Image (cartoon, rainbow, N blue to C red):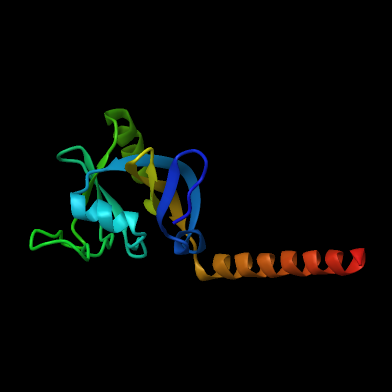
Length: 158
């Protein structure tokens, strides 16, 4: 797990999100976790590959669904279920704003990483719009072209 000078300690990263979505607005939310989930995350175990965020209009809550946090190795029979829904802690005005944004066709909430900020588990997520195959190919081509330019400049400096 990486640690920065700001008291932020990385736990889980979703690298696939930038490949599959155009990411727009960044948001941060606290998470309601049980003790064995926190211990497992502190070990750097977990996955956001298939995770998504559900806004429940009836109760006015946000939930992180299908995030896999494996059982804590030294836990007892009261260990948590690895893919249980986890409540996100957001203010009412944030929930209302996100609800309006998600109501737009094709926009979704994409979880990108879980980290510890001053000892508290936080989820970073973005408003995202899905990429199609052509967009993904265009991004790969742009990366390759940039890499070739950098190589040419490096060779020229020698």
